[in-house]
Image (tube, rainbow, N blue to C red):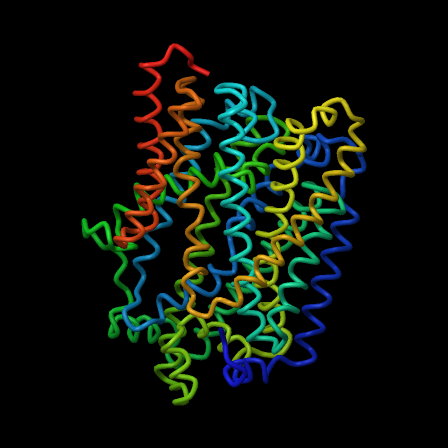
Length: 497
């Protein structure tokens, strides 16, 4: 947690002009969301946009959904930290490869079966029990990770604006619920697209402004960064405990990104909103440009290294930054950038937080109502679609409250252990989900084998977590364990469903 004195260091420069910019952004985006909402009242319109959304808007929404506030905060912080450098950029190789893998492995299958979620695909291929297991993995992983991300965003914004964490949680959750409730996935896609434009502009402005503040400009910035060994970009180490190596980027991160696209309904739902498979492939492939945001923010970190080498931080601020480097970019934004512009960049941070959360709300609503709910209450399958949409909207509100409450509950854990675990929760669930998706593609495996493989995968991932093995390795290891155990078990069983 940030102390009040530390909050004052950042928030003292968050002016009335900045507040006006932030409020105008939030209200203006809400108005746009109302104007572009799909007028059709059916389920297909609410959850798939009537398959009538342009591929480029879907692509921008995909980028916005995957770009959390951590990209804005953690990437510059990693570069700025004592032993930081550009090795994180190796992960962008996997981000690109994971998208390509999804485009050519599962996206075609999803469109041919006309499904609402990857769990429908799994149900069609492997049965209801396996699909319910996959939905459970998703909902547990999504609620935990989204609750933590909501808290992480709120903590940063609390420091910047001087408002309490609870207020920031409430603001983010409120607008995420409103945007999801107004028009379902159509409103979410268009508001996400607007948010992408805002935060890419904010990232670029921060970079160019910082470079402009350095005597000697870009050349001097790179010279200082080189002197401090910040320009190292390749790490060929085979040590699995190292988080950012070339092999993690090529293998581990590829599975991570493939899982995000293929089995995480928060992301997959957007890919299913296009007019046809060709448009969907363009949307997913074009979203690869999202890695540019990571590169921009990494070089923002380089610029901050040079700027504060020339303009040293005070002892008080330096002590605060040294203990938690993720404060460096928020500190720079509110203390060095002009009023109004800093407000716009803070709006971009809000945008990153809200775009991740509203995406989760529509995905959780669809999964809980049309997936789990329709099996528990079969009447949902024959109920008038407008009534099901109303129920889905209620589910959005409920999930919004649940995630806000989770974020608030996590705020009481001072040591950060649970927060760190919360960010890694998808690693426990999505490795198994990737394995299940491949088994569904092969039409192999049954519930007993897949359940056994999933439990073994969780144990193996827990062991890797305890041993400090890089988070990105959890995904391929979990997937491989599930596939091997399920295939072996199926050979000893005549029941393949």
